[in-house]
Length: 292
Image (cartoon, rainbow, N blue to C red; front, side, top):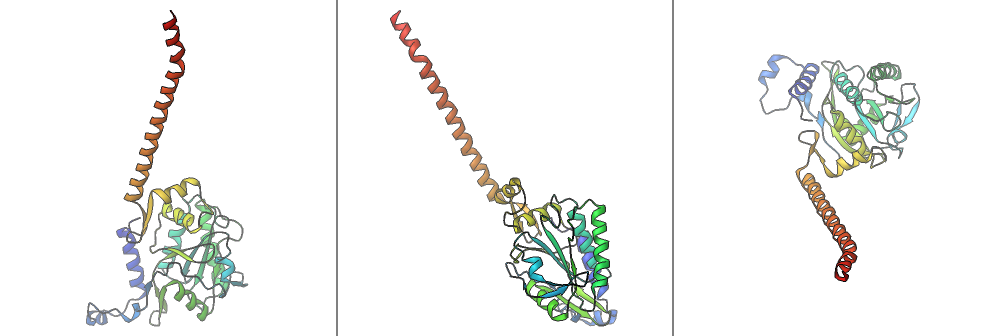
């Protein structure tokens, strides 16, 4: 999926709204200098990084949970999001975009895959997590998203645990004391069943086909159909520049070559069988003609 101009405008507007400073300060800043509020903000992709499974968070019910028990269960892939629940705009856009995409993904949350959301704000507690989880699960249900019991935990934690998870996953964020808000980017991460980062999607809108194929790929063949595996192997390749799966010319040429070889073999086999049939049926006939 090529990032649309609308998505870019949403991202830019959300970050700018959260980090707005005085106009005079912005005018005085050189064009090649990064604003202090945006330092360390962004996504640095740490593909294949192992998430720290020993980190302990609290879920929406206030119970302690090990991250490894959620994202390294060995059973199914995970979509991990880092947000905060009081976020005025960007987090809502990200999670709403995820819900929208899952409505067209032919997989069941909590059965085929899991979603885990972690707050980057250590001041947020389980009550706020429970409130947000209830709202997003209700929105998902309205859009026909099938979710197993207990799906999509919303977690909170202390600053040390949050920072370690963010550092390992490459999720850069910064607290802005002037606004009382967090500067951060929008991203969802796909985690393998053994807890490694498989892919990033950095946007607020997510193509359902890309989400579906990313989950199948992250699962290492544990979910999805034969068609999904066929498409990943022979047709599509992930393009980080467009943040989407795109048709791969080499794979398609290779597939076309295989089909051509198969057609040649099938044609040769048909001709060979026809020749054998002529020989088997023609021998006796020729003999009768000679005798007559």
